[in-house]
Length: 398
Image (cartoon, rainbow, N blue to C red; front, side, top):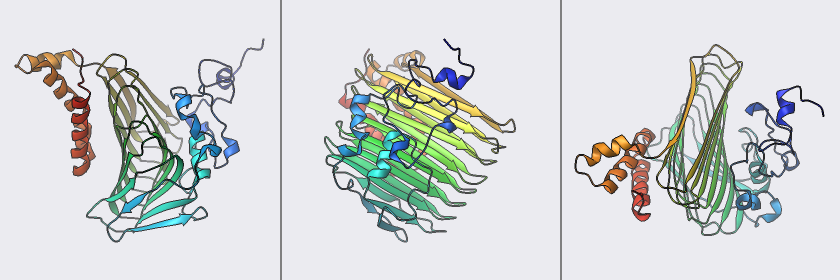
C-alpha cells in the first residue's frame, strides 16, 4: 500500500465525503468551473459541494433530458429609465459573470433558450424598486436572468419566487455592478412547499461599487441557493444577508463564496435561520478566500441557527482561506442552539406566558438582520411571514 505524500493525495482517497470518484480540491478556488456540461460530472453525494444535499430529491436537475421545453416564465415591472429585454443565447451580455461551478449550474447554463436582461443605466437613481416575478412554473424548467447596474447608478431589485405546485426550477442569475454603483438585490423564495429550486447567483462588483445581496427562503421542498462573487476592482463593498425559516421535511441550503482578489475591498456575510418540525434541515456553507493580491481586505462571515423543536437539524460550515498577511481583518463565527433560557426566564418573570415569550425570542433573533435590509416593503413582508410561521405551526414545544 502506498502512503499519500500530499494533502491533495490524501483527500482523493475514498472517505466519508469529498473524495473517491473525483479529484478533491484543498482550496475552494481550485474547484472546477466551466460552461461545458462534460467538464462537471453528475455528483454522487460524497463530494464536498453535495454532501449535505438529499440527492434523490434534487437529481432530476442533473440531466438535460429531464427538462421540459421552454424557459420558466418571468415578468418584470421596472420604472423608467430601466430597460428590460428578452434575448437569445448568443447575446454578448450573457455568461460574463464567472462560470458555472457545480452540476446544476452548468445544466442551467446549457438548458435555457432565452434570457431576460434588466439594465439600469449609468447614473440613474431609481425611486422605486425593479420587481422581477417568477411564478406559475410548470414541469422542470431552466431560467437565465441578468441584472446590470451601470456606473454611479443606485437601485433596488426584488426577485420573487412563488406558487408553482410540483414544479422544479434550475436558475442562473447574473448580477453586474458597475464602478461606483450602489445596488441592492433581494431574492425571495416563497414557493409552495412542493417546489424544487436550484439557483446559482453570480455577482460581480466593479471598482468602488457597493452591492447588498439579500436571500430570503421560506418556501419550497428543497431550495439550494449558491452565491459566488467576483471582485473586479479595488474599493468594492459587499454585504450579504440571509434569512431562512425551515419547516418539517424542508431542506433549505445556502452557499456563498466570497473571493477577494483585489485590494482594499470589504465584505460582510450574515445569515440567520430558524428550524421547526421533524426532518427540517438547514445548510449554510460560507467560503471566503483572500487572495495574494487582496491587500487591505476586511471580511467577516456569521451564521446563526435557532432550533425551535426536536427533530430539526442545522449544518453550518464557515471556511476562511488567507493567502497574504497584509489585511485589515478577517474572521468567522457559527452557532446553532435552542432558546436562550435566560431570555425566557426574564420574560416569564415579568408575567409573559411561555408561548408568547418564545415568540418574542424568535422575533428578536431575526429583528437585527431584518433591520439591516433597509427595504421597508421587504422588512414588513418578512416579519409578517415569520409571525405566520410561528402561528401556523403552533410552534414551540415546552
